[in-house]
Image (cartoon, rainbow, N blue to C red):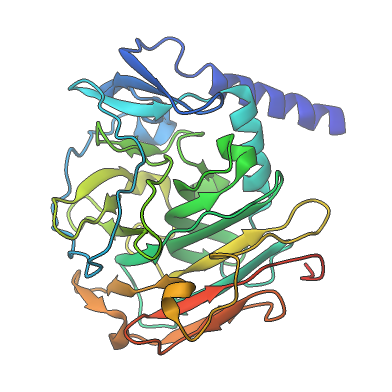
Amino acid sequence: MGFLLKLVAFVVSFSLVQSTESIEVLKSIKLNEKMIYDCLDIYKQPSLNHPSLQNHKIQMEPSFSTLKSTNQTESKRNENPIDCPNGTVPILRNTKEYVENAQYFTEKRFNPLTIERHGEHMAGIRSEGQGPYHGVAASMSVHDMIINSGQSSYANIYVTSGVNNTVNLIETGWMINPSIFGDGRTWSYGYWKGAKGGGCYNNICHGFVQVSKTEPLSGPIAEAPPGKRYISVSIQQDQISRNWWVTDVKFNQPDIHIGYWAKEMFDLISNGGDIVGVGGGVQASPSGKSPPMGNGHFPTIHPIDSARVPDMRIMDSSHTFKPQSKFKFELLLDNDKCYGFGTDYRGFLFTYGGPGGDSCGI
């Protein structure tokens, strides 16, 4: 049985690695030895090969306008802008090592509706009732930390619903994961889990429809002066198409609509999610050692010295973004020995983070 499972995994990995070989590549951008973007014809991107998207018509732009970020110190989301030729979009090349490592971390992800996840710890907030929700937007400070191979540290926004052991989930934010991204930099990323157990990071499996020709779903986040490094992102369901869009929200520039997960990929959030949330998280290494979260330090009375979420907006059944103060939330903090959470810090929604260590438990 073990041999059979390994054989199946190999076949799946091989098919994913080979998925773009038959498509003409007009331009390639190499970010490191593992991460290479190919500019592919938007109408021939691999996601459209998914059985549920065989007759899918690409939605070139959403029917909504995203609420502008209130964060006046945001930095660029991507370190080096990608400029694919007109009519093409940047798609990560699925090398064998990239696929295998990402699948390993995907298998470690458990039900997001519980804080009892093996090796994972979190600090953040999630909505309590009042759904369905059709979107969430937030600004998050971005930090560099030393994260070892086999570990992951991230901050994200998410929309989710669950029934028994079935879960639908969409999340985006920033992550440090040398095993997936091939270096220790801080990367933007996306993750989804949908119908029939499908789902993955970024473009590893078919599902995410890339629309922007300049900004991919995942890339190294640009550097910025201390205290001024942020990303502002949203996950929003289009009221007409019901596709779930990811948008890079700008303060004083036009928003960039990166792309979307089509409604056909989900069976529980086609008409909105039951829960939205924002916060930080980590995945421990196989040895059990938990990595740092946030900026690697516990929150202090000086929010600028802490990892922080300045603001958050939520879209309810009215399809209008509203301040988080209009909603009820519950705190998620599963280990106060290794990580912390703080509130009421001069206009910031909350601060979080911690050093991790050997005794954080599972």
